[in-house]
Structure formats: structure tokens, C-alpha cells
Length: 81
Image 1: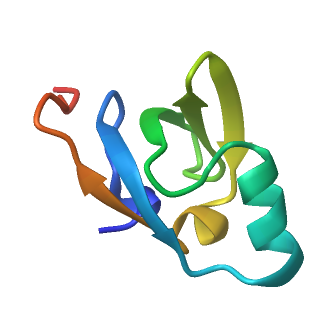
Image 2: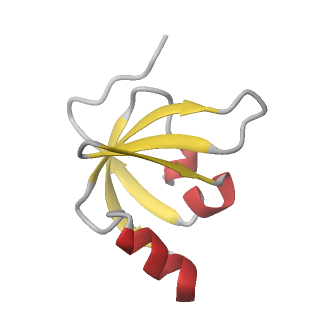
């Protein structure tokens, strides 16, 4: 499962990055690294970008960047209705 596949209000844990180079470094600088807990907040009206929350920081990502981040679901994640 990738970060791109998550639903609003769903909490996941980053497993690994498939991105390389400058994009990978930028994601790591933003705190999106293995074992980080990420909550999907919402998607823009046309679907791109998405807003995620890492700790107390809100970050917007392109769906293409989110598709390169493998995640696993947490036991207490909830999907919005």
C-alpha cells in the first residue's frame, strides 16, 4: 500500500521510500521517513495534491510523490465515512 492509497483520517506508518535523489531528500527533510506516523487529512477538490499530517506539521504532497511512499496501516487507523 502507498501513501497515495490512504483515505481521509486514516493513520499509517511509513515503511520505505521508492523515490530517489532530490525528491527523496526533500521528503526526508519534511519528516517523511521510515517509522514516521502519518495521517491523511484530505485531498484537493480535483484529487491533487493531498494534505498529510506528521506530528504537528501539515504537508501537501503531489499524488505522484505519495505513490512512491510505501506505508502500513496501524491498528487504530480509521477511515472516514
